[in-house]
Image (cartoon, rainbow, N blue to C red; front, side):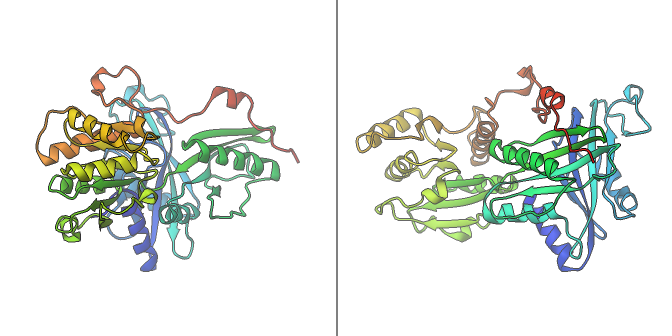
Length: 395
């Protein structure tokens, strides 16, 4: 069963194939607390169920119910939804208040999509998924007293895509494109404001990340729930084992690839493991030594070794006898996983994926009740940038 972006792209392809229409709902701005962050998407087909989520379940029904008549004119619209308590919402005319007590405001962009009039960002999202290369898109989400730039207008940036669209004038285009390049380089979305005497526009510069990749060395029984749970996260999963009776596609029906690779041959899999998360869990000492020694010489973003600490340190000693250069050693986690106390294959898989997710988000994996800072990092919108906002050429 597909999930995340894969499910969304599948639903979009079905709409286009059937000659239908849909409304795309995208979270473009969050103020205060919210379950989903900017960039979350939900597709609302004319017929059938919605795909994707834009909240924890409190907004989807309301958005789906009204999305079609809100976009009846064919133009993109922004809808604001407040999760403050009714008494706390000072702007009830401008935002629907749900009284959940979360004290947040979610700005949702609603746009029509069809095969005849496709949304450019969905084509870019598909291109990012197919190429494995990140992209960025700048979307106008507010235009104050500036009728020349409309909500929903956008510029795209991708290494394999040339976008000829323009927003207003060369000065603005150049600035937005520079900010998109910065978004791509930093790998993080942000909100940008540009103003002049004619007014002000607010732009959501969104980073579109490629699909996260997981490579599992070892095709034992405990790898099966790990693969299943990783697919629930919409990760691309490759399973590799030197033993033909383990490395069988029918044992891992959800995996994107299952490879039987002879450990006696030189390692030639850096194209799979560089930039990926790696779990070494073959339960074979000789296989683990081969796989671990090889990936430590590459550039994975995370390496986890299953087994007792003493066993892994013995593996490392033997690996160092053959090579001293292990550039990925600082990204090695052993024993793999967070300390949650489980010992079933399912609980081990949970611990492994939890640690991988924490490492990707630069968190320590502790309990949220002990966290003093906000759970979610706010979308950057530096005050210094607002003070030095781009001056558009007046005409």
